[in-house]
Length: 251
Image (tube, rainbow, N blue to C red; front, side, top):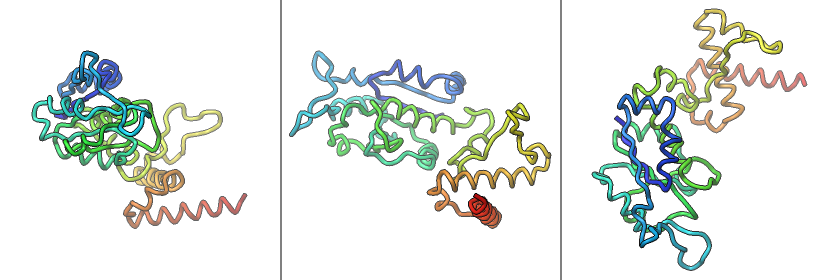
């Protein structure tokens, strides 16, 4: 069972956003254990203050280290859990890191980032792993922890009806997913590729692999360099490059 502990200022909103569809079903089946902790319950003073101005300037606000520390340490056995904090300065979150975290079989604490950041002393107090979901800024870390949580939850056995859905997804195979088609057969004169309707499983597999390689090459060439191409994939890549050269010369 995957156990996730969310430290947030908006527990009800985050719970509502996460707990729908297949995740709601997974919780009902007992495949997940999800708990929420309202950061303001650990705030300071009568107003439950969780933030303050940075020393040396009055620009923006920072989460207080003592507040976050008290929230984390209130969780039983937190010492044996992975602790994630969302911020733009963190390590880039990707499928490899998500899978590694699932395979560690540890409970996970997810701390939503807010304001301009957090008092840096928290990283000396706790083994927190700062994580970023991309090179852009959002208003708070709740959407980021929701993204991270979903990448973790969908890997739990039984959450998805077909485990092949995980293996075939973009980034799980190291490439973008192949093109997909459904009914109707023809849309505004565009017909589903004949090979996908042929029943020839070998030809279908080659078509899908070539489609995925081409899409990855065009849209995410950075991923190609990380792939260890098989002999068949190298042959397909040569065909793709030749086709692209011919198409360019025909223009």
